[in-house]
Length: 394
Image (tube, rainbow, N blue to C red; front, side):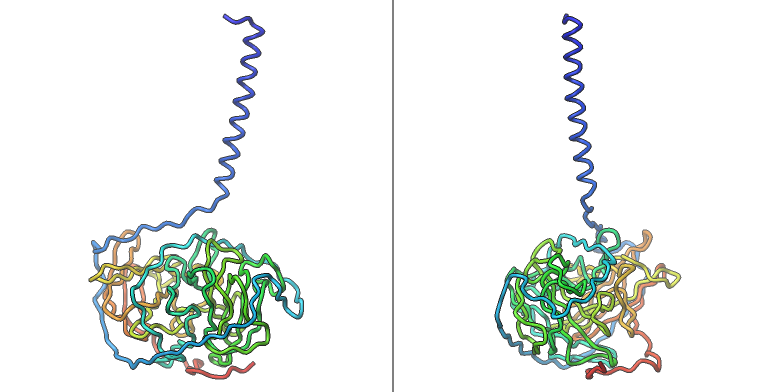
């Protein structure tokens, strides 16, 4: 038995070690709590257990044609040397940028060439832009973070991410004039910490419904053009990188209509021309009362190969629907054929057959317990002035 003095000293030493251990555990808990939680989703079973929607299909055959892509290499510089000639006032940051880890991208053994641009199979379509990544690379947008996708605290994606190795050439999606080249495109003033990183913006020679069109190319490793330079479709703008706020090398691509603003974007998958023989699926996803649903998963399944294409309806802020389609979900680059649309709404599985027509936007609506409907939107009102391609009024 230890003397009282020694016992007290030993207890005091044990207490100090315990307090130290508690501080370490508490610090670890705080650090882990600051990390964003990963986005997870539970896919539907391949064959739905409850089918309430009708089976609808239609077919259309369209002509096809090739597209020729050229490139132009200018002086390169991987350091942030390009700054705007004027220094506009920096606007307050309206939201925080947080980007998720990119998911696995489906790999196709063969990818057909693109339809020629502009490609407008109906009065209401506007496939004006070629892919900014050449077809010899995987140039399909990341499936789990499409336009309107949400990641962590309602941060909504205003473009599409195209994964490609660092150093892959980035090509102009259409002819126009470079109006931004360097850091700071989000804030509108030179900022090496800009979330877009090194970026290029093009004001195009053509517009839509008398409005200007812009495309944005973000996260470059280097920029090969300068402000004021005119480029043609397929000219090289720079190289894929991971500058700005990213989790890996990729191209962030946006389409903006009317103004060159973060808040005027449209879904690029309704503007990028699809590969020959492939189509696009767009939908308006609502609850039973006709109100738009945010973050509702829709699955398109090939019943033969059991391959799935996934998308979620748009988040609440920062994105805009097409004036005609009024969509809140788009899945591009789907080979023509018959597919199964699937959704789970409050514990009930719904499905419907949809025929994906080549070179077309294939439209559906989902309305809660009423399920799917495969019908094109009605003709727009008198204020709608379709124009396949036009010179905008500045």
